[in-house]
Image (cartoon, rainbow, N blue to C red; front, top):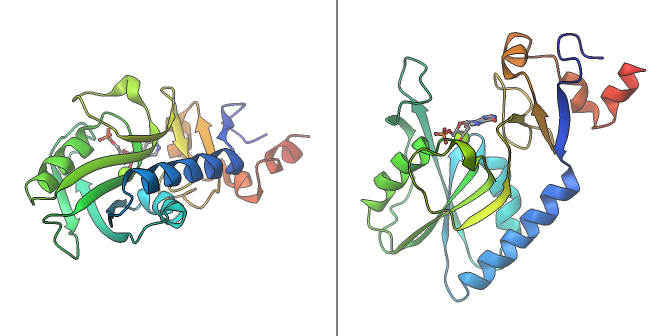
Length: 203
Ligand code: IMP
Ligand code: MG
């Protein structure tokens, strides 16, 4: 068993769960935007894995663009104000924009970002998130496309990290003790060998 983690980690969504949900979201977007060419905007780095899978399931001529933001120092993820580290390459005036996110937690980051994007004059602006931890939402947000609603538990994998690790897991792992993982970032390394690998270690 992984020292310090006890039984505190488990697969929340398998690769199949994710891929089949992503396929449905892609079909829904293809239907809703038929005859149009939406621009998908992903927030680096977490949202990039979802975007890569999602846009290959959209049967329309889509554009993609990326933004990178960070929370102002002080560590407060609660800080609503973010700093733009990398802006979009192209302008979005008159475009059908869909912001693609890995997870929406309090929603503070996204509401700040949406206000900034709205000011640039897109014709429409919608949100597609893989995970929605809606119980922790602070500002009211309208989310047009949502993969899964999740309980108040920390997750890694499929783009989501802890201390920059585990973004490359093809599935999503829920961690009961996010603080323990932060202290020992290698605690879940066995998951990188596949969802069954840590059982082998335990025996
Ligand atoms: P919000 O402003 O509280 O909605 O924060 C959302 C951002 O925090 C996400 O885009 C992620 O980068 C990060 N985040 C929130 N929850 C998790 C999690 O469970 N695992 C990894 N990153 C997370
Ligand atoms: Mg993010």
